[in-house]
Amino acid sequence: MDDLDRKIIAHLQKDNLIPANELAELVGCSRTVCWRRIKSLQETGIIRANVALLNREKVGLPVTVFVNVKTSSHDPNWLENFATVVERFPEITEFYRMSGDVDYLLKVVVPDIASYDEFYRRLIQSIPLSDVSSNFAMEEIKFTTALPI
Image (cartoon, rainbow, N blue to C red; front, top):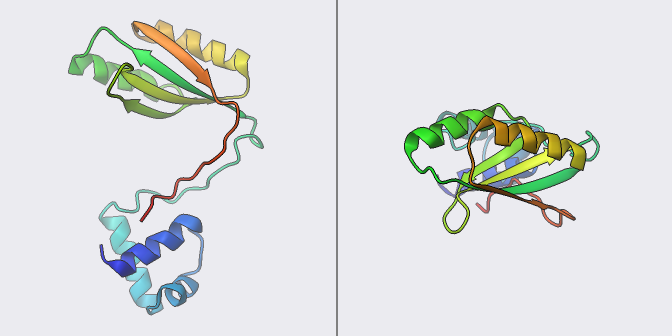
């Protein structure tokens, strides 16, 4: 990646629907060069996907819960099984293996606390876990998908 790619990515992270000719003008290259650069960024996997970011509240998912998971099993087979279980839960929007006191961190979005309780019950029935603790986000102060390029 060079400076031109970084400029293109910076603009695309703000507005992925910007017309190629407008983007080319903003970054200082021709439309053709800009289009080729975008295609190359997609082919190399730097641009992973083109998606619409939704307003959680307007689609009825205002509650965000960060779920800390501890397990007594740390073998690769258990993790593979847990990852398979996680894929079956659309409420889980992010899933991380952690260092420190917590083994895994899940970001969960749900309509309300009752829905979270139902999610929690399904999760603990799906796979053995040592400890599950939940932290409810009170307010979203900053949210971005843009990487600091």
